[in-house]
Length: 446
Ligand SMILES: Cc1cc2nc3c(=O)[nH]c(=O)nc-3n(C[C@H](O)[C@H](O)[C@H](O)COP(=O)(O)OP(=O)(O)OC[C@H]3O[C@@H](n4cnc5c(N)ncnc54)[C@H](O)[C@@H]3O)c2cc1C
Image: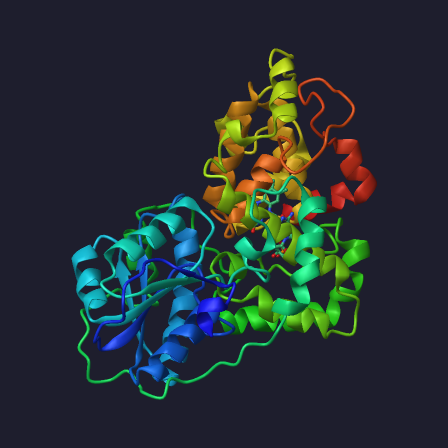
């Protein structure tokens, strides 16, 4: 019975109306594969002998989707449109600004379904749907393996506190999802015009952000994500634990942009990783525990992107060291132009700008140096957040906010006291050199 499913949250108490279709407002989970919200919409549609209509709305995201991201997203939506059509499901992409059009579509729905994202604008969209749908509205958490509200009822302190809660329930949720075709195909119902799913310019325009240039080393869409996953599991998973800290080895999945746009489900990744020949424990720790800790953070802390949300100990120590000399010190503009005295850092900044991706270890180093050089911890956080979300293809994710704040102590513990950092964990160039060949990395970027 869907009402008892921990993935579901009913958004209002309205009764089904005599509508023409089940409307699924697709939000974060932009895929047809392993999508619990789409399968619920199909289940409901079959029950009422109606078709399914999927509507995706673009605009008002915070931070806004960049032009670089819009291209990646459009590639995914183009594939999605084809897959939905093959399954007899209707599909429209609408600018958020066309609210009247969306209301008219909603008025013809017998039930409305949406999926759960963990940021403020996702919450606002769900609230709006519950209030404005003339029919029952339900939200489905399909982007955490253990639904965020089932994993914990509060903002967790650290990975060590959420890990047992997640791991205890993992087997209950690590179950394949059957993808079904609705019994009734979506046809003969006229729909308003929308954005062409593959039109990256129209998507960028609806998102309202110019942002950096698109990149061509990666293509969006589920098929590409699944292909990348297969190669990673076959060639890199076995070395993941040992070689993960080394950006030169690149034994990582590079699936984060696909996860950011919901183009692949963490369920699909985890099931395939679990069945792989190599040990997947370290990889699942990142994909499930770390990623879902970040979802927990953004879901339960309304100010998930604010300096004030840092743990008390971190704010106290950063304030104590606020007056420490920054030597050298750089402005945000100097850093964005990669004009610091640290060639490894400059290479990371250049790679991030050119490709929209950076290995985790370099992201840590990159952000920790900004904390070292910026004139105050608040300036450091705003610089980290702005650059992260401007250049990374996976920026604007719950992972972005939790990890940006991690730089300043979130989900971490106090370390030995240092200048500027106080007791927040520092990172040094010599520490980087102990982990991998930094000169080879710099050469690989230039
Ligand atoms: C300062 C800083 C900023 C970051 N900004 C982002 C961001 O904007 N968007 C983003 O998705 N990730 C961010 N991360 C987390 C992490 O660096 C990336 O998710 C990871 O490097 C993506 O590469 P991958 O897919 O090859 O990861 P893999 O090592 O292959 O891991 C698989 C998946 O696990 C998850 N994961 C891995 N590391 C982490 C982590 N530390 N926290 C949470 N989930 C993790 C990701 O979803 C990733 O795709 C940031 C980390 C730091 C330290």
